[in-house]
Amino acid sequence: QVQLVESGGGLVQAGGSLRLSCAASGSISSMSVMAWYRQAPGKQRELVASITRFAIANYANSVKGRFTISRDNGKNTVYLQMNSLKPEDTAVYYCNAHHSLLGDYWGQGTQVTVSS
Image 1: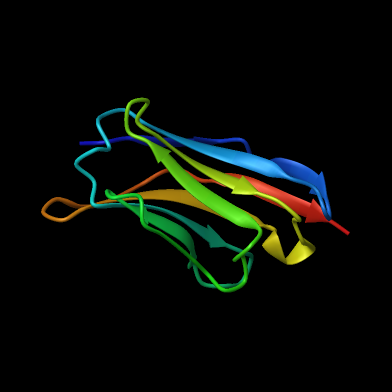
Image 2: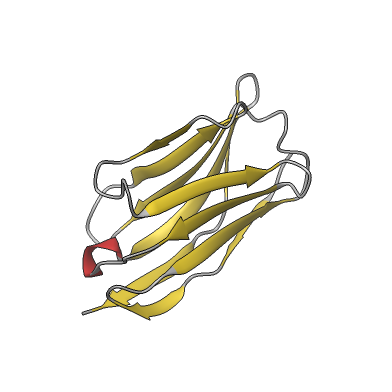
């Protein structure tokens, strides 16, 4: 069982930056994919960015060029650097860990609010 704890959310003005962290209680090196999702009020949860065990990253079109995902297996932590934030980035951001055999683990979420 792996527990994920997100941090780094908050209130920021449009154009600003935030860095989210996701700390795992156990090793993430066995997780095939680590990812960040977000859910805005009244909308479905959507994939923001993912990174494989081999550090191959993918991004939603809406965040390409602005967000960067990274993972530090030694610290069992995944990061999401968010730059040039827009009001439409406002959402609760969730960390996800996917194990090919054990399935998915989720964090409790961290609120990101971008003011215009």
